[in-house]
Amino acid sequence: MSENLSELYSNQRTLFGRGSLDKLVPLLAARSQPTLLFCGQSFLQGPAYARLKAGLNDHIIGYEIVSHEASPAEIDSWVSRWRGHVDRVVAIGGGSVLDAAKAFSAMIQHPLPTARYLEKVGDSAVQPITLPLIAVPTTAGTGSEVTQNAVVTDQQDIQIKASLRHPVFVPEVAILDPDLLKGAPDSVLATCGIDAFTHLFEAYLSSKGNLFTRQLALTGLRQFIQAWPALNREDTTGDAAREAMMMASWLGGVSLSSAGLGVIHGIAGELGAIKPFHHGEVCGRLLFPFLDLLSDSDHPLQRKLMAELHPQLFSAATDSPAQFLKQWLQQQAITPFWQEGPSLSQAEAEWILARANSKNSLVNYSREQMQMMIAQAWHITA
Image (cartoon, rainbow, N blue to C red; front, side, top):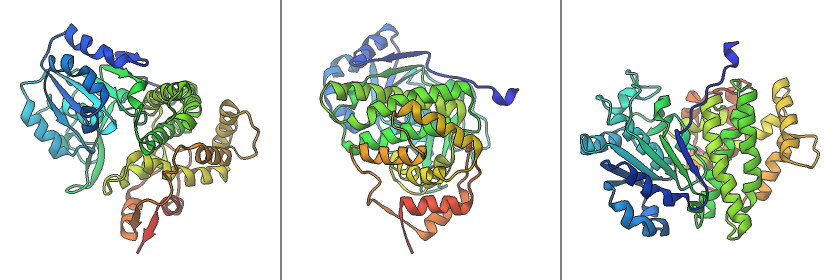
């Protein structure tokens, strides 16, 4: 029976709703501690920071700007700079910012370099200790504000994209303010949104899934379907869409933590070790050939789950839920992020294939099937 067991870890406190960012400064003031801010450059240049700046600066002792997925060396340098000076962390930004802050918050409490604790390559177990962290996502996609893992990427030295992972690494507080999505470029809204979808969808189809995890994922998928066509609208429909996507993203984080992910992330994680492509776009590009595989699947549980999913999301009948979903996603996208774009060399594709896996997919996908997914997602050069 234990194989059907689910575990749910989430924030101790979650504030949700338009304008909820205004709760941040009172939250910091309620318990005075030396606090470090992690953020992106775009946040510092935006209207939310301009509004909060005076109050926020009373409570932070400094900030670190994150522009990409953090490497072990970068995390170690932050730890070296701030160890002994910081008791709390605030992270305001996209998934890379939140993951960097989560990694820092944990590693500042650990004695060894970051790489020693990394999944796949580390030789030391993480300990259940981290600084308190308040996570404020400014994108809706990764769900990092509620996950147990901090993604660390090194594309130069050890060529690895892996996680630091422990239940205590879930941020203590998440502030989910959909208004922070306003004004984001269409490409960011779409590629982050499809990342949230992939988390929910792969968790729904996971071999580790059960009634509990699938109902969580299904709730998020319904919110995603409502949100996807209207993310960039500047009216009440757009406001509702951004709220729905923020919820879908959070539920995606919960779902992936509870049920795991599948072959899309089994490929995307390895690609991310060598190429600086946007993770959400990578997942979205791989999603469409995966849906082609799914439409041809004769796996009984996959077919059953897709047949049950379709009427929960759409009113129109179909003989092929996977093809219907693929066409709907492409037709309703606010930008065709899967078109054109970067290429992969044959050597890079081979490197990825040698390391990719099906993770928690119900089907163990062959090298040929994964090769097809990559070849349909990117132009492969000699």
